[in-house]
Length: 257
Image (tube, rainbow, N blue to C red; front, side, top):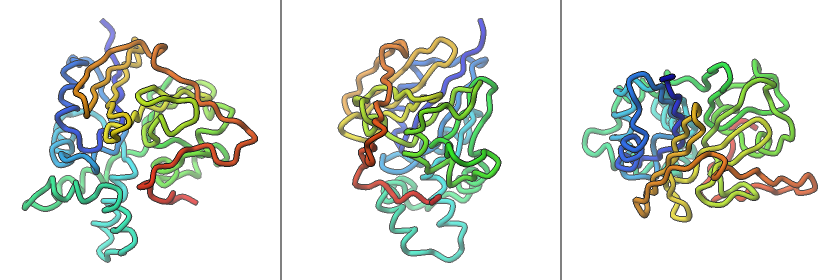
């Protein structure tokens, strides 16, 4: 049986739900599992999530939350606004999860070397997306980890022969997408279904061989498995609208602009 490629959206410190999700997906030793970043913050078990993914052998991308933490720790000179933004974005929960051991230096080094994107041939994995108006070679981690509206509102696929799969932006904040649904746009899918958010609570894994969506709800503990076609919703951008993305009150300022 051909190996599956499983892509998992933003976990945000929900270790118990991640374990349930992986038990439900039941990846074999032949399957490939990829995390899109944002393992940490907001949930109560960031330490456990990072420790597991780091030692699992699964591939993981850099998310904007890992980037914030790495930048703060490695700068050597704490910049108060950056620290405040991270704490406001769930960093306090991460600190608490590490307890008396403090933020693990090995974890920081591991986060520091995480790739910003992975090219799997027909699939292109990235945490946030790409800027549609900038050549790929000129983009950096700030674009790949932070871009939102420019990417989602683009009416044209960035790649002719690759489907982009992202996390970062909770799908129900996009117009026409309900909580728990997978967002679908021009050449991309968004699978951050808001594991930490009480309006949704869904943590998502996508089997890109069979196009099956696996989800565990961090609030209700419900488990569901559905074909992608049943959960995919096309983002309904109107070209005459200037403010299309419903932002959340804790959303940090985009850093690439």
